[in-house]
Image 1 (cartoon, rainbow, N blue to C red):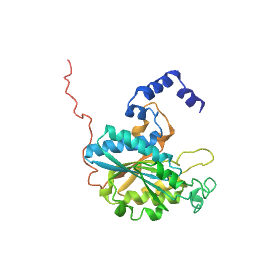
Image 2 (cartoon, rainbow, N blue to C red):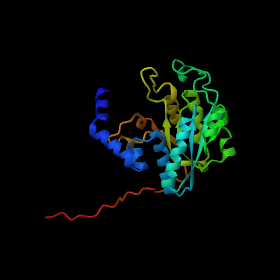
Image 3 (cartoon, one colour):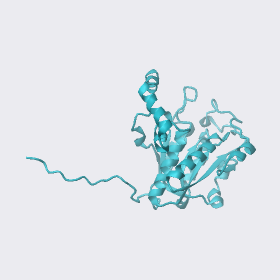
Image 4 (tube, one colour):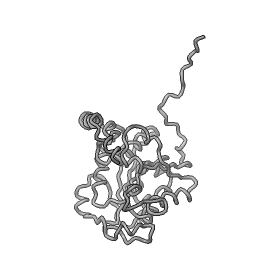
Length: 272
């Protein structure tokens, strides 16, 4: 930890981050991690880039677990910035109980860390501040059923899973099994409760990580995987290890060519 902190406080790195924060455009600030909730920005920005490459005029973003609403408000701000850069319209949906966490179902929900009633929402105050996002209140196991038919969202390209529990996350992951018309072929996902501290002790056998592993086990045509491109660069913020990408292998656009990197190398004769 001391070595990591020393690296983050290196004068040259601090100067670079200040310069990017002060003078950089949105993409530069995002990749330097100097925007609010860069995890939200990363998922939404890359979903919008993919949408543009695929010719989608609109996409959707979802936050599962709104709590006080700061994340949903931040998502709206990211959407504004991104839509100025990329000609893609962005719809936003927020799912939450509204009354705080329900009782944990069993040990997989980590009752030693989470408690009924945590994160209760002031619904009226939040709705007064929201500009475009739609709140969907109730247990996600119920509200997700019928969501596609009722709201007919643009293809979903970015999702934040912050429902804390294994049971709730498992229910929310069903969104990835929706009809392909409502989903992008690759969906950028952030899972908030997957690293933590020595108190939470998140593992592959409880909580969100268990929900992810079980989803992959039971869905042959959809897999959640870590995007190894996030290992590039010198930024080591924790959120970079909390991103998964859902690959929908049977989506009609999954194999559509989107690469903008020149793959043809010029021939160079070898001198003799």
